[in-house]
Amino acid sequence: MTLVQNFPALCILLALVCAVLTSVLKRRSAAALTGLVLMVNLVMNGMALVYTLRTGESYVYRMGHFSAPWGNELRVGVLETGTATVLLLVVLLSYLGAYRRSSRKIEPTKYNLYGVMVDLCVLSLQALIYTNDLFTAYVFIEISTLAASGLIMARQTGRSLVAGVRYMIMNLLGSSLFLLGVVILYAITGHLLMTPIHDAVAELAASGEYRIPLDVTVALISVGLGMKSALYPFEKWVPAAYSNATTTSSALLSSVVSKGYIFLLIKIYVRTIGLPVIESLGITDVMFVFGACGMIMGSVAALRTKTVRMMIAYSSVAQIGYIFLAIGLGTMEGMMVALWHLLAHAATKSMLFVAAAEMDEASGDTHLRKDIRGAFYRSPLAALAFSLGAVNLVGLPLLSVFVTKFMMGQTAVAVGGRHMVVTLVCLAVSTLLNLGYFMSTAMSLFIKGGAPGERRRPEPLVCLGLAGFLVLNLVLSLCAAPIYQTLLSGFAVFG
Image 1 (spheres, rainbow, N blue to C red):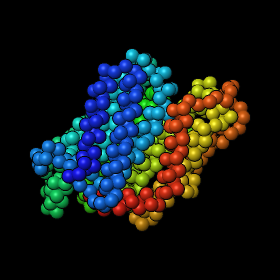
Image 2 (cartoon, one colour):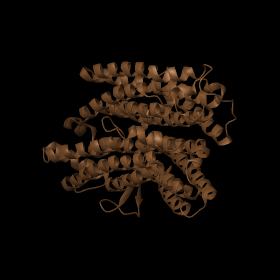
Image 3 (cartoon, one colour):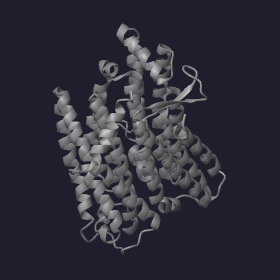
């Protein structure tokens, strides 16, 4: 095994070691070490991506070199390395772009603990993407839940503490459902590794044995991960969590933490249970209905909000709806659309949170949508970044989310029937609602007025973060065809 094949495992261990070291460092040292480890993880995952692109195959990394069923495995391929690389880049840009503003909201003596939470989120994200073992996935789901709750509570205000506790309760409920599903699946198959489970489930499906336990298992896992991903109607914790956390926390929670759960769900559907079995159980129809409702209800709620951060938070509910509707189509093409939107939304939503925070600070820090009117004249780079994110989520042609909507519509037409009608109607209605709140807000940025303020020079890290997000979103948009085709080829060895 070459050195680069060890990088995914080394990245997980490196993040864990960094979390331990960060806990005993002072504020500046802890912040610097966390940023350094994010960069190293990004580089190492990028090198693993290049390796998998070159070979065109996936490989299994056995922890401790023990084979199934006793050993623990990581599965590394183009989809895993590509997803990890993009999401780690989003984490790094969010961390850099919002560092100054977030650090002012946290007590200096406790910033090292905040760094620990960031490290643990990165650790669990990579573990969920690469693991080939369901119980290991559960362990890192719990780590992610506790770390994310800590990120919300870091401001130590009354609202943030309440939001953090609510987030923890809802997510622990989701984790419990997931664990129950894993326990039942282990009882009927005798395996925890995904590939042996797939073979055992295929035999059970062919023989008709344990049909009801298998139904219950898939339902528990799906609902559990859906709750943790803020799938409608389990999204009630989203507004308070995103609006009361620091900017870095909001960006990570909406764009990265939830995406790890969704990637795991796709992996369970495709690699662990198998799409033919999933479709025969009917769970995709349930995900389709929840996703369609989320697309509309999230957009309606965003349209009615008065603050920018609440608008972005409810928009996340709508965008998660897009992902689950694509999963609910029940085809490999639908799963591919869901994965693409996962990446496009992560890159866009973090940029929106960072840009909105910068415009707020330049506009009296009221967070009200009416007060950021004319923000372009006070914070031009942030206004441009926010505008690009807004038109992207609306679905402007040539941008990354337009690819989602086009491919989703095309996949729905291929599926036909009620799925086609509901998908096309939801896409049209959601797009109109997106126009109502995103475009009106983006256009107001270029109209003089709003809160009093002067043009301010953004800090270097903010410029770096926002510029990086602009480049990332433009690359995903302008190079969508080759990136999409690369990911599509990776699906061939994903299952």
